[in-house]
Length: 96
Image (cartoon, rainbow, N blue to C red):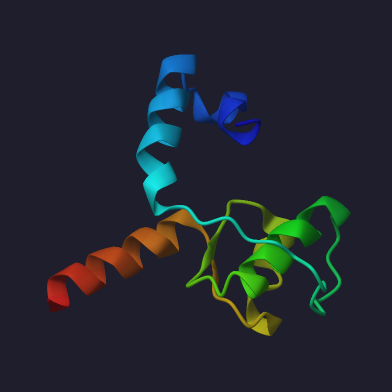
């Protein structure tokens, strides 16, 4: 919720609520009991996202955060910026 309220997204409160309502059925709760080993990252607040991606066996981690994107070559889960995700999704939809 906090992230959706960032000014860069320019989402109204109603748009934030709609987005959450639409995405919740596709969401899964993940508990990190034993934190996995993750690469060092510049922003300590990003560690939670890396741990969740590994423990939740994510197909990818989509972010615009350069601190996370720089870790892509050494991280087990693909780290994609939004443009890369879009290209991947378009490529997948064209091949089916």
